[in-house]
Image (cartoon, rainbow, N blue to C red; front, side, top):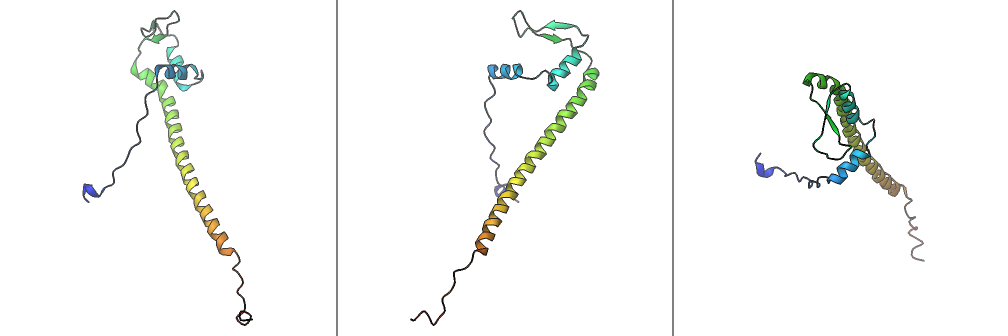
Length: 132
């Protein structure tokens, strides 16, 4: 098969990245039970911290001192697996939703066709009464 015979897939345009204000609002509105915050809080227990150079306010955030890669991987792996399974399940649910919408449309069309087919036909008049 030649490359000319293949259909070209048109991708949707990429949305603009969020602004700094949108990112900050998103972080501020996040629940403390968010997996990312839980992971950070658990990994920072009993650790030395250093101030972040990203913020100059008196309430500057503190970043953890890097630790061994193996330790963080052991703690983050269950959260990664949980997040991964959530994303996979979300994709499956979206596919199932699309399939259900298609089947619903097919059923509506079949119902409309059936309704048209069972409507009574107009009664034909007898042939001898047509001339009188």
